[in-house]
Length: 434
Image (cartoon, rainbow, N blue to C red):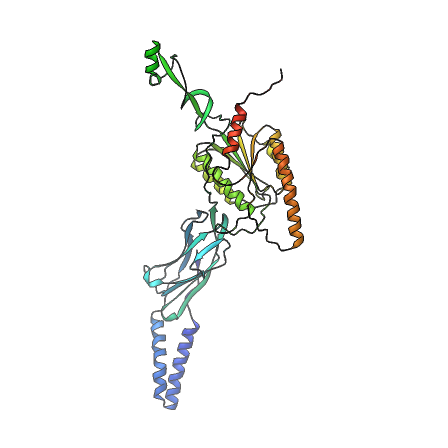
């Protein structure tokens, strides 16, 4: 909230008084009635403005209708002026805000204060966030004027407000079940019999079986009481690892060409939302970022909100954590680890190899955009970029040779084939040393 000392006369008001009085004096001195006619409107308007002079001490407030939105959604920034009796117009202007579109386009707005209640005047800007992240809205200048523009309050500088834009989750769906379900409840079929919904077999009745499980057709044929058994429905732990070491490319926002970090963050949001809605326990680790963070595994809408808020606060680069930091994480046996990375940094691929050696079920998702504009016209830079892409292809081949699948991010169905292969590999017989 901001205040101003008082209403101050404008230069136009002072000029009107001076010109009106000056014309009348000259008319009396030189006997010029025409000058009286010319100066009378100025004197009348100046006197009217003095009579209608505002006497209050207005207080300005600003607030966001919603301080957290999804990428591409809109909200309103409200400027309110209390104790605005006598104000005729309320004006405001906003500063430049990257990745936030304001309406009207010029970021300047003037409204009729007399249309509002006598004690409060309000104007509103429509804001639309075109990129995920934490954006500062403002600063802004607010001012008010009385009738005929005679007195002005302000302009007053209003401080910035934080607008959190959660990443927009692109359409994503995975038909394949999550391998190695270990929890008590969920949507994945367990390999063990238990209380669930998917049919297993028909077996003789045992003490403790529910009566509604009795299979009457087979019981009548065999003259023994039989029941149907089912597979247990379990949930799984899904750990999403987000590589924020680099952000290459110019981000065009939601409607433009994405950078590498844009693709990584949005893909992570889609995967987290998908598995949380399936009832899985989802955790997240942001690696290589200036503000690396860890979100413990949990489920529910509150957990999804935590994950999306953590993604919105990601800042690339600046991490000094050791390369093997992820190998010391507390990850349950059988958890599915999804590493999302543009695979630009060799450190990320070494992390993937370290996790694979520990026996985790790991899938590396390549989030490199198909058409990446790194924004440099220097021929040497382009040559260096092509060399790095060749080295990247060799490193990805080494990771795949180590048994860690690397799949490109293509939206729906990106993980179906690899998850089915992992599930079949887990069910296949293994050699063991005696």
